[in-house]
Length: 156
Ligand code: IDP
Ligand code: MG
Image 1 (tube, helix red, strand yellow):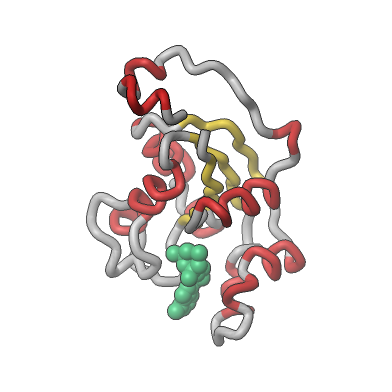
Image 2 (tube, helix red, strand yellow):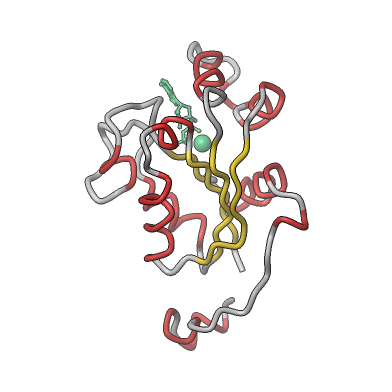
């Protein structure tokens, strides 16, 4: 099943939003298959935000990601990557639609509460970056039949 990597950022941990954010993915019927709190470091962030290394805010962004732990989460579902990105909303939270996580919980383009993988290809890399094999769990969902239709289950 398709996996996406989510980070609940330090600003959301500080603001007490961990539970609210996890609850949204559970309610959506995405399955949580990995969950842990970790302290990020500079080396990991250089890798994770490599696409932004030339940007003026790169150092400030990395520092903001180390001021407190993050909650790393792997969720699974049909088309999970695209679905999660829609739930997260635009990078600049002021432009993110109401109903999205950034749209509902943030006013910032930088302190925007959550990271989510932006493509299936990157999700594969990011899940491996943040979770060791033994930290991900494959378990039978008791309610999949009530969450997906027959044709959808055939795609899973
Ligand atoms: P994304 O998180 O929506 O995928 P990216 O472009 O990958 O957006 O940027 C990663 C993170 O860098 C953003 O979530 C945000 O925290 C920060 N960021 C992106 N653009 C800006 C900016 O223009 N100013 C400050 N921080 C930014
Ligand atoms: Mg991104």
